[in-house]
Amino acid sequence: MIQHFADWLVYTVFGMNPESHWGEAVHFFFYDTIKILILLFSISLLMGIINSYIPIDRMRRYLATHKMYGFDYAIASFLGVVTPFCSCSSVPLFIGFVKGGLPLGVTLTFLISSPLVSEIAIAMFWGSFGWKIALIYTVSGFFLSIIAGMMLGRMNLEPHLSDWAKQAIKDKQLPDVETDTFGIPFHKRIVPIAREAWNIVGGVLVYVIIGIAIGGIMHGFIPTGFFEQYISSKTWYAVPLSVIAGVPMYANAAGVVPIMQVLVSKGIPFGTALSFMMAVIALSIPEATMLKKVMTWRLIGIFFGITTLCIIFSGYLFNLIF
Image 1 (tube, rainbow, N blue to C red):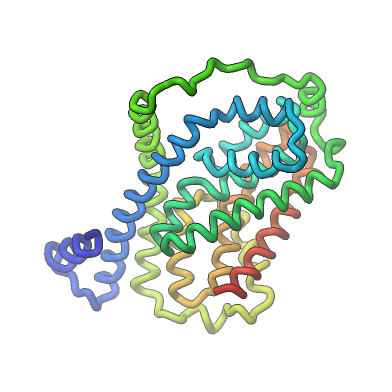
Image 2: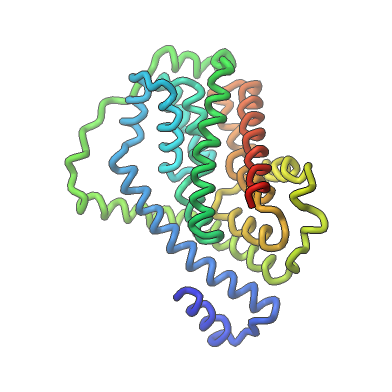
């Protein structure tokens, strides 16, 4: 239905030639924008329903007061998936995890998972590559954050926290016990959840439009296979180079996934493009600056280094699979 509407709008109403560069670019823009916005609202609604039954403060208290034998890493990663935040807006929640006395590896798992595998990223992947690729990306991002968090958790990095963070852990400022909300009927939950989902869509709308617009121009004007002469799965340095290139380009999934889609369609291996996208989302200079509140520069460097290694490994792995 969306395909027919985009065809009608671009080729009939606008009268553009489907074989022209601008015709391809404009059709790509309208088709992907409509498809991704519908998916983004739907997935945000679903995640909002899940999040309403799993309040993050309640889970933070539970993780801080129970011994989980490693399962706490999986819970932290899952909380990161269902919270709709970019890397910078995840930092205040990360600080709350630190103040709650959670193990450092668990808190870092959340910090990696939250921006990397949000409902925005899932919706954008689904719209750009299909549900199977979106599922593989979600599962791989989930386990990537767990592996990185466990590696960091075994490195005894607590001495490299800031003095403020050390004092906060010593005080263990747990959140107050919340009023039980599980008895609220679903029909009373859904309206504010739908409103929040709509706000999420509105909050990233500009990034969606800009990202798809750039992707549309690239789709229409860059020949298929253009990048293959420079970057292929056999070029060993392409994956780490893409990660390095992605760090200074701070953006969220809404802006970078459409560009990744076009890069893949024009010849860049999927794993290489995915590594670039992960670096843009999960490794940002503004995030490093905000983390200075709770970490020394040494710890920030170690955190970024381990995350970078996991992203590079993921890129090579996806290049072998696809």
